[in-house]
Length: 386
Image (cartoon, rainbow, N blue to C red; front, side, top):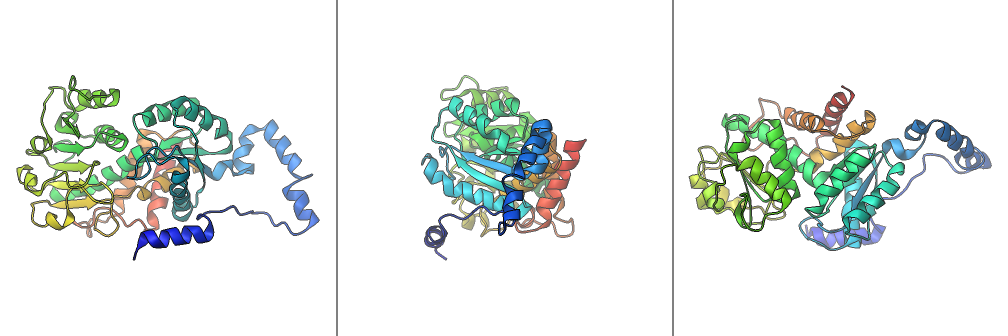
């Protein structure tokens, strides 16, 4: 199927892919009096006297804002807010379909950090949570951190943390397949953007040895004092490479057990896999074309291979995480989404692959597995309430 052609046709036919529905019938004067004036005045007074009632008597308790400035759309780059809107609509559709969470897309006509923070804070009273999406780094780090500190509702940048959660879920099971332990393996993360930064920090939080991790950008291994280093890259270098090792991707892969690619297509040369440890794990997550040609994988010693693509086994996709995470956070009336909640989500996803069926080509559940969002929501809710 020509997905591009069909997508353009269908979006044009329906003028987008989401809409608004009313839970109240509006067919009689009585209906109108209950849904709107005069009846609604009582609800307004009730909320004014008891602000927490906004979560139970309005959409706030079930509604997420999906917000972008259009600066980092999928793999397309900075195309602006209007071009980001169909992607945000899609995210909202996924929230509803997979976890029953209502979500509303909002694109902002600014890419200024302070203006974005101010805009999100201004609209926050409407929503029970904020999902930041497709905002370029390094601005995305400050925007999320500031909003987490200044808002009383969960703020979650899915490009960072959704990716980290699903990658770790996949890694839990991949390590079982190759019979290796997280604390022992050497990990190479190719890419130093938002997703790679969050994944690195989360793997360390989950138990990976930071001294066994090397993070690379297009200039090579992140090293303190190297040229082309930002503050976020300095933090990663300090965390993972305290001895200041230098080199390129081929150098970093020597005796590595795990490769996690969040970069660009075809940067992992098949011959370089020969230098990795026995039974290596490779997650090539660049979209739509992964870091290594899937056709060449069988010719290498890669033991477990995963991508972000739906037409290949082991699809490492954020949709396994974010719907259930927000479902659980909303149900628990959580003020934020913590690392402990993310860890519980990752373990819940991994647990849905039974030991008897676990294999090199089955390390994560299918995105359409209806158990996923429920399991993640329960795990997040349990930790949030504790």
